[in-house]
Amino acid sequence: MSVTISKTRSSFYRRLYVAWLIDQGIASVPSITAFTGMPRRTAQDTVAALEELDIQCAFEQREGARHQMGEYVIRDWGAIQRDWVSEHIERIAAALGYPVPE
Image 1: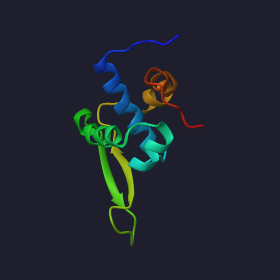
Image 2 (image 1 turned 120 degrees about the vertical axis):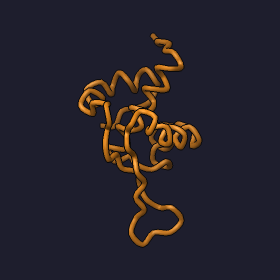
Image 3 (image 1 turned 30 degrees about the vertical axis):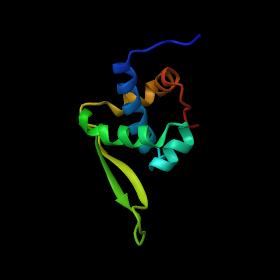
Image 4 (image 1 turned 135 degrees about the vertical axis):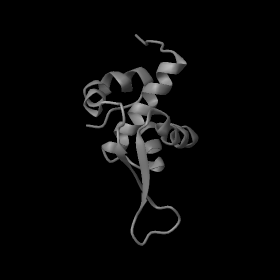
């Protein structure tokens, strides 16, 4: 049975989900899109929108790498409780139709 969620909730959940993925090491737009099947633009926009939740996400270029090769890191979860997201990630992923890493 599929549950329909509002655009507001799906947007919020997508941001939590992407922040959690980054925190788990799925931390580049190509790896997020490969893991989730999410369109590249959606992944990029979601990473950029993390700041709207006061989640501090920074891009770290790999040493010696060229052309923006690197990964994102979550420096601060702001008002979001990282542990709550971890405890509820299966429900969040299911609501969005995305997988959860093992």
